[in-house]
Image (cartoon, rainbow, N blue to C red; front, side, top):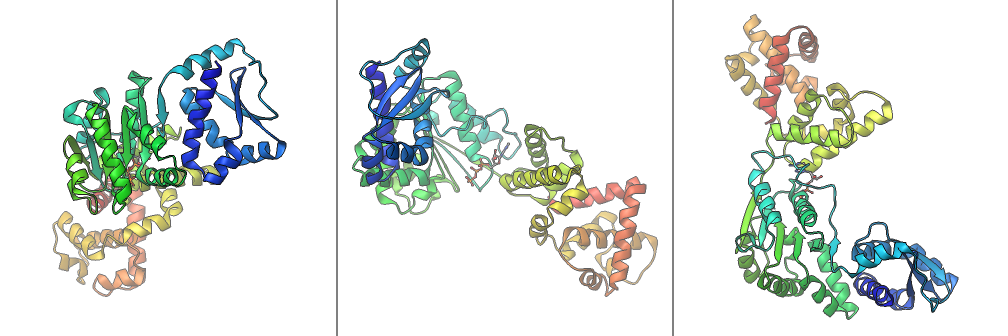
Length: 446
Ligand SMILES: Nc1ncnc2c1ncn2[C@@H]1O[C@H](COP(=O)(O)OP(=O)(O)OP(=O)(O)O)[C@@H](O)[C@H]1O
């Protein structure tokens, strides 16, 4: 028991040493004495001042680490003033913690809620997901090691890493699996060098079963980190331990990373993740809303998915804003409400749609000439599409009414206003106009 506590606490100290300054470590943390009392990790400080300081500044970090290392989410950590009693106190609860402490497992940085189950699959990410599932089923197996996942920002790379981690741990709860963002890896390494604990750092990363490093492009120009990563990579790879990295571009094209690392990253398997297509964006929104216990109408999901086209993180952010707005105002989330609540965000996307583009798509859709939309003709076959194009220009761009009028053969702003009003009213009463409107917005936004 004594040995278990001291090993848990010394492991905690080794990690803390790489995370806090050398002064903090030697002043506040190293002098603490540890004991297990009724299944709780009790830290003894020599006086109240030290106890308060550690409580304020370090208790969250210590608790997190102790739970990871003990693999017990229930492990409590508390501070007391004084010295550790010579006779350790034990109760049956200790048995549980004790058995957990001896296991060599480690689960660091993995978010339990990011799983394969809540990763929405579409054409853009199905290969990446399939390879990720294969890696999770057979970590360390040669042809999938290393696994490099690459693609633009906010497209689900990190989500897939966590999903792999969770899947592996669900089958092998004792596996030592670590997820770390590359910037954090660099920071921890710098601290370890300063604190003279780099050997612990190296030992730690080389002892893992699965190492996942996110956004590895941040290693660019960091020669010392690259050197350490290179040796960690070799050490893990030689022992068939799984390495997974993500990057914003194809690994061979990451700039300012040593060639020997780039070439190693292409040894195994790589998969790209692309921006999701409209239907997948809608499905993601519906899933995220469901996870938050919110019912989202499909037309709202379509509206948001049409507006925000390239980044799932922003799409999710927009949904969160809409939900917050609805909670705050006690109003339901409708298309009009979302349009109003997210005006600024939507406007930033709208500049991508031009009046000229709208005229072209509308003319094609109604099989008329673009010039007709700008002409003086008042025949119905031209006037209605013109009104539709004006309404879409008002809806999907940031142009003012006079600006829109000018682009339609120099018409007055009241004509545009009238067109918007007519189309809006007809959408409520005439299903074919509503259908045209939906089809056209989809064409313009995808
Ligand atoms: N297919 C998907 N299904 C469900 N959620 C998704 C999907 N793709 C992305 N997300 C969500 O979008 C958000 C952003 O994804 P993530 O953080 O994984 O992006 P990333 O590709 O790692 O971005 P970055 O390169 O900026 O780190 C997360 O909340 C994630 O859960």
